[in-house]
Structures are given as structure tokens and as C-alpha cells.
Amino acid sequence: MVSISGIRGIVGDTLTPEVLINFASAFGEFCGKGKIIVGRDSRVTGEMVQNFVVSALNSVGCDVVEIGIVPTPTVQMMVEKFHAAGGIAVTASHNPIEWNAMKLISGTGLFLDGEEGEKVIEIAKNKSYTLATYDKIGKVEKYEKAIEDHIHSVLDLKFIDVDLIRSKKFKVALDTVNGAGGTTIPQLLETLGCEVVGLNLEPNGIFAHTPEPVPQNLTDLMEVVKSSKSDLGIAIDPDADRCALISEEGKPLSEEYTLALAVKLLLPKRNGTVVTNLSTTLAVDKIAESYGAKVIRTAVGEINVAKKMKEITSTIGGEGNGGVILGDVHYGRDSLVAVALTLQHLAEFGGKISALHKSLPQFSICKKKIELGEINPDAVLEKIAEMFKNEILDFTDGLKICRENSWIHLRKSNTEPIVRVITEAPTSEEAESLADEFVKLALEK
Ligand code: MG
Image (cartoon, rainbow, N blue to C red; front, side, top):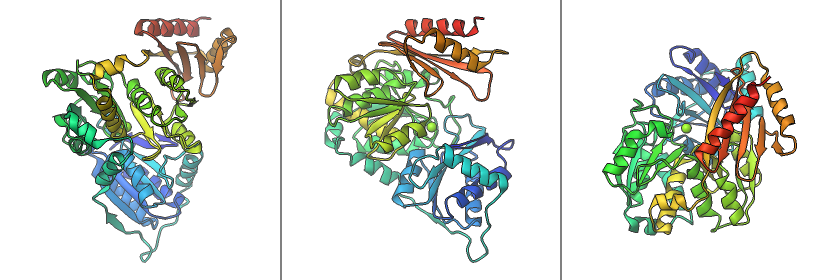
């Protein structure tokens, strides 16, 4: 699948050497044949895919800095550090083991936006890249300290009090699902004086469970948090940009609260505008409101949030899927940032994570799919917009109906005849009945 943010497919099926070479060459051309940072997650196909990517980049004259098995945000950071022309993270994020992908990063350290992505696709389609002659092919250099650099830049943040966190001697149960976070996150936690109870830490790409860090996939971690009497459970996705939290009682906080906690920690320290997407929890707005801060909502998609943050130099933002973005480090979701902010928060709070969670505004999100069959999704959105025209409507990304303590967000899929309905309300029951109401409305003649 080719999209603006990258090329994704099943290895040995759609993600062939030809596809990899074509797109990597096109990306090299797009980057003006400059220096490219290449890193990968721990997938079993990672080395093979990376070798094609690196050779293709060299073949069009790009020098490559290989940084090894690293979190995706580390690739973004290294693009900035090396003043590189771009970066490629070889990762399919939370997709299953048979998938792999290239995530493309521009010279700014941000993922490609729509326009940039289109340019790369165009170059690839027309194969309009020029191959270098023998004396101009690119070179490969290895850089082994990317993870160390990344950890340092997080620990150097002025609102991270390393001594305070160390003094708490937190016990943390950690599940990195055998992904790229398996070496990085334990290193970060140990530097912060934590005792790590590790689960699936070996970065061998054999995912021990379905990799997305959502509650149904984290049952082992929940058990381990309880049995080991840990202060906290942390789940990281395979390319370590997302972070989900489990309370000391073994209960998931919902990924939405990783960002809510970060916002709550930061706003009293330095006020500023929070940027997040339309489908992220209202808890963020309520917290921001209590500090007199503004929230800007963008279309769904990390690049939309990151670009807006950069544009207005917002310092804190992210997505409700456990993706915290801190402008101080770089404009991309970063689980290292999320982990450090969470521990700082817990250390300052001085109580249990469950109590800290309860101190935040409580909301619950419900997500459903509406199978439309022959019904036109645009007509459904128009019909519902008309029905609720007296309420506050947002058309930035599909249709969102915004209420004081709840919202309904309807988005059509570009690939299937469905509309996704996402709702949020103070309780899970209310969120679910709200979703059911809109499923029914959508299907009514
Ligand atoms: Mg990811």
C-alpha cells in the first residue's frame, strides 16, 4: 500500500525488492541525493528490507548513516542531529509480523506531508531518478550511539528531575513486544533508577502477542504488574512511538491518558497551546481549560499534529493512541518522552498511579464501524450534519459533533465502504450508547 507517509506491504507478497528499490530510489532523488539516516525496528525481515533500501539509496548517489535497531522517533531525531536530507524508518509499526514498511522522513525530521508524499510517489511512478556512476555512488557509515543520544536528550529536559525520579526507586513492569524498544526503554528506566520487570524485551521481532498496545493485547502485562507488585506497567509498540500505561492494580489506563497525564504535568510548568487530533480525549481540553491554555485540534494523522505544533511552536501535543509529542525533543510521537514524563509526574504526585489517574477528568471512548454496503458514505455524513446543524460541528476531518462533555466523530474510510464512528462521554456506557445511536442514524433511510 502506497500512502503519503510511506510504503507498506506483506513481505514476499506485495512488498517486493522491486517496490523497495523503486521507492527508496525515488526518495533519494526527492531528497536531492543528500545524506539519509536509515534505522529499523526489530522485524525478522528488517535487515533484508534495510539492505535493499540502503543499496537503492547508494545507487542514486545518497550517502547513508545506518543507526541500527532503534525506535522510529530516534530516526527522526538523528535526521536533525546529522542535518541529513531525510530519513527512512524500516518499520510497519504495530502491524503483524508478516508486514514491513518504509516510513519516510523529510529533512526537517517530520514525516512527509501530503504534498511531499505525492512528489515521491510521482518520482517512483515515472522512475524519474538518475542512477549514479561508479565514482558518485553513495557510501554507508554506521552510527552506534543514536539510542544513547536520544536517551540523553530526554533526560536533559529541564522539567525531568532525574534525582527525584531515582529517589522513588519505582518498580516498572515493561512489555516491549520484542520490538525496537526492547533495549532502549529498559536503558532509560534503569538510568532513572527503576527496577525493571521485563516482558518480551528481546528485540527479535517475534511478537509475543498482537503488537498494538491496546488493553486486549496486554493481559500478560496486567498480570505481571500485579504479581510483581510493580508501581506501574508500561507497554510499547514495536517501533516505540506509542506508550500505554497500566495501573499498579493491573488495570489499563486507556492510551488516551498517556497524553492527558503529560499535558497535566507540563501546563503548570509552562503554559502554551496543546495540539492534538479530533479523536483524542476531552480530558485534554478540560485539563488545558483549568490552566487557561488553548487546545488546537487537527485532522487525524501524526503528521497533521506535528506540523501544526511546529507551525505554532507548541511545546506539547500528540495523539490519544499513546503518542506524546514534545517539541523540545523533536516533532514526532516518542515513547521515551512519554515514559520519562509519566515517571516525573508520578514522582511529583507522590501517590499511586491509579490515584493520579482518578484525579484527572474521566472520559471513555467508544469506536465502532458502520458497514454501509450500497449506501453512500458522503450522503450519510451530510444527512447527519443536517440533523445536528444546531450544534457545534467540525468538518476538518469527516464530521465531528462537539458537545460540552461528549463528542461524536464520523469519518469515512478511503479503502472500504464503511464509516467509522468514534464517541466519547464521561462513562463507557454513555459512550457506547452514543455510538449505537449514530450507527442507527447512519443506516436509517
Ligand atoms: Mg508505532
